[in-house]
Image 1 (cartoon, helix red, strand yellow):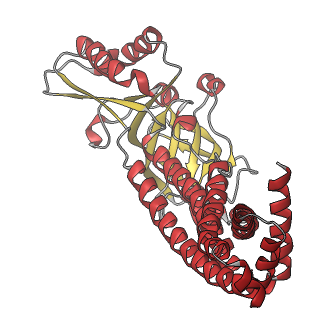
Image 2: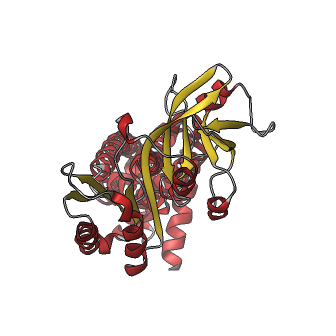
Length: 402
C-alpha cells in the first residue's frame, strides 16, 4: 500500500513538472468525460420528459382503458355501467381509477352561448394523467358533493370568458333551457397555440346537473374506465374486467387496452448510444494525444530513468511509475469533467427545453459519473502502457550516456 501511495505521489509531482505538456491532452479527456456523463444524465432527463408527456396523453404506466360501444340499436342501454365499474374496483382492490368521457355542452360567454368540449372525469384523473394546473387547483373528492358543478378550464376558455385570472372567482352558466352556474376553480395551459375553449368537469356532477344530448354525435355513448395498476397484474386483470362488463351489457363491444408499448425504450437506448459514441470518440482522441505527450516526456527523462535503475529501481517500479502518471492525469481530468457535467445539467433551462418542466425530476445518475471516471482511468492506463514499456526497455548504460 505504501508503494502504491508513493507511486501516486511521485506521478502527481511529475505531472506538476510537465503540466504544460499534458494540459491540452487532459482538456480533451475532461471534455470527453463531461460529454459521456452529461449525455447520460441528459438522456435520463429527456426520457423522463417524454414519459411525462406521454402519461399526460395516455396515463401512467400501466393504465388499463376499458371502452364499451353498442353493436346495434337493440343493445341494452348503459345505465348499469357505472355500477359495474364500482363493483369491479371493489372486487379487484383497484386504488387509482377514473371514468373518462368526452362530450360537449352549451356554455354562456359574454358574446353568447357556444358549445364547449367537456371532459367528464373523476378526481384521480389529475394524478393518473399528470394534469398541470397553472392557476387554482384540481378537483378533490369533496367536490363531488358540492351544490353546483365546478370546472377546470384551459386558458382559451378563461380568455373567452373575459377574465384574466381566478382572483375574481369567475363563473359560467352551463346548459341551455335550465342552466346551472358553475365555478371555475382551476386553469390548465392550452394544449397548442390557438386551442379552442375546453373544460374538465366531474362526471358525477355533469350527470347530476346536465343531460347530454345523445344526438349531438360527439363523444362515446358511455364513459371509458381507466385504472392505474402494477405491471404484473395487467395480463390477468384485463380479461376479467372485459368479462365483467360484457356480462352486464350483452350486445356491447367491450375492449380493454393498455399503454405499455410506447416505444420509449428504443428512444432511450438510441439517444444513449449516440451520446456515448460521441464521448468515446472524443475520449479516444484525448488518449492518443496523451500517448504522444507521454512518449515525448519519457524521451526527455531517459537520463533520469537510467540513474534510478543504477541505484536499484526495478523494472516493475519504473513501469508502474510511468503508467501511474497517465492514470493520475486522466483521473484528475475525469473529476473535472464530471464536475462540469453536474454544473451544466443542473443549470439546464428545463422549462424552455421540455415545455412546462418535469414534475418528477430524476436525480443526477451516479452511475453516469462512475462510468465517466472508469472510462477516464481506463484510457489513462491504456495511454500509459506504451510509454511505460519504452521506459522499461531503456538500458542503464545507454540512459546514463544520453
